[in-house]
Amino acid sequence: MNPKIWLSSPHMGGTEQNYIKEAFDTNWIAPLGPNVTGFENDLENYLDQDVHVACLSSGTAAIHLALVQLGVSLNDEVICQSMTFSASANPITYQGAKPIFIDSENETWNMCPIHLEAAIKDRIAKGKRPKAIIIVHLYGMPAKTSELLTIAREYDIPVVEDAAEALGSTYKGRKCGTFGDYSILSFNGNKIITTSGGGAMVCNTEEKKKNTIFLATQARDQAPHYEHSQVGYNYRMSNISAGIGRGQMEVLDKHINLRRKMNAFYKSIFSDVKGVTVLEESNNEIFSNHWLSCIIINEKAPFTRKELYDLMLENNIETRPLWKPMHLQPIFKGAPYYGSNVSETLFKTGLCLPSGSNLQEADLQRIANVISKLKQE
Ligand SMILES: *Cc1c(COP(=O)(O)O)cnc(C)c1O
Image (cartoon, rainbow, N blue to C red; front, side, top):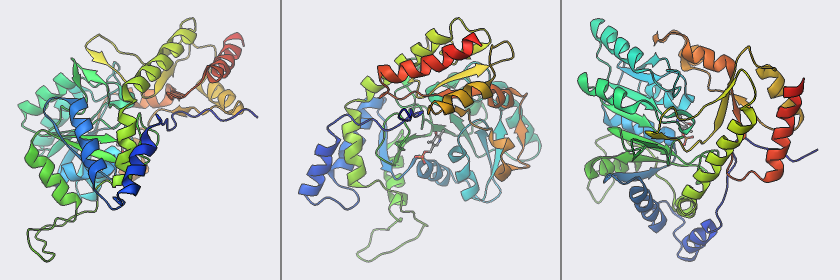
């Protein structure tokens, strides 16, 4: 059996262990320490826009702390893109609030501005002003950010930007992860860079960063003893994880280029296949890191999604349907949804393909072989 080809697996650059060794040599094994500060500085420099970054234990923790700081609480409503990973929406539930889900548009597969505005109007008419809007840049593809932000501003609703999949993507020349009232990143094992597990809050003021760190370290008030006037969390990143992150930052742009090459590879092998479209930038104002390359297979294609999925699996190649929309998930049954069947159709017809920056020529050959076999059938 050939070795497994993964959708997206960790890809170390080589210097990560130096930062970890330094942490061991100086006994900075405990949480925090110079690697955390160093990784935060690296991210701040990379993202630009005078942002302030607080490294946390996960992207989910970052979304949770964003909602906490926006005052989201029991029975509040929070708007969220429906087609996304459950981690975008779960923190709404942690706060006892209710998610309101919005459909995608066809161009970027992210939140549809038209349905967003319709939802806001309808919720306000029903007597509830949404407390926050969670937008997502799925698979690294920047959402229609200007349109979404304009609507959010018009109704004066804060935006949480879930850029977990979009580190290095840009919208009108500006990095994703710098557009929200709070923005979040993830360094989970399958993301474009990894710290084995971790995330970050990107803030537009130093004060927000300080408050994020305060909440993430058990909300200790100023006192010689342990004094608490707010509920705190244990959400900070460890100095060991941050060491991996510092090494990964050295190869981030190189790895983005390699992911983009994977996308170009799929565009080329599917270029002569009717009924198959590869997700790509719809205009030159957006630049995707192409964290995952995805395709849509419609009825004109010479093979079905299931046939492609099955033959890939048989050849030990991992593929996966697109994110199942949240309004179709059992945990969010009954949540309000504003849409017109775009995310449902994407879920039925889409497939994520192996996209890692560490895939080799031989891997691409195996993938191409499976696809050319199906083309001929
Ligand atoms: C990975 C991911 C998250 C959560 O990040 P973790 O670090 O795994 O908690 C949130 N949103 C999206 C869209 C993601 O892909």
